[in-house]
Amino acid sequence: MQAAGTNVNPSLPTTSIVTSGPFRLSRNPLYVAVTLLYFGLILALNTWWGIIMLIPLLIIMHFGVVLREERYLEEKFGDEYRRYKARVARYLLMI
Image 1 (cartoon, rainbow, N blue to C red):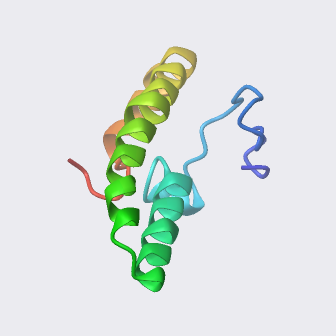
Image 2 (cartoon, rainbow, N blue to C red):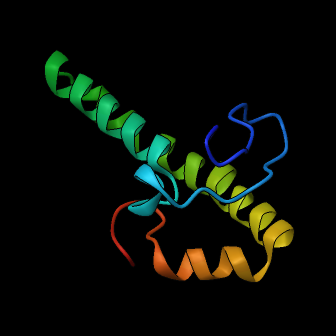
C-alpha cells in the first residue's frame, strides 16, 4: 500500500487503488487473513462457541464494513474501481 502511495491507516482517505500483491487475489485480503486466523484459533482451542460467534462477525463485517468501503471506493474512483471489482474477487472466490 505504501508503494502504491496510498494511506495504510484506514482512518485516512484512500488515494489510489492497490491491485498488486495480495490485492490481485482478493479485494479484502486483510479480512480474509483475519477470518482464517480466527478460524485457526477456534480449531486450536477446540471450542464450539467460536464458530457460533464467527457467523455474526462475518455478517457484520460484510454489511457494516466491506459494502460501505466498496461504495466509498466506487464513488471516489468510478470506472477504475468497477474494472478492478469485475476482475478480482471480493474475498477469494468470484461469486
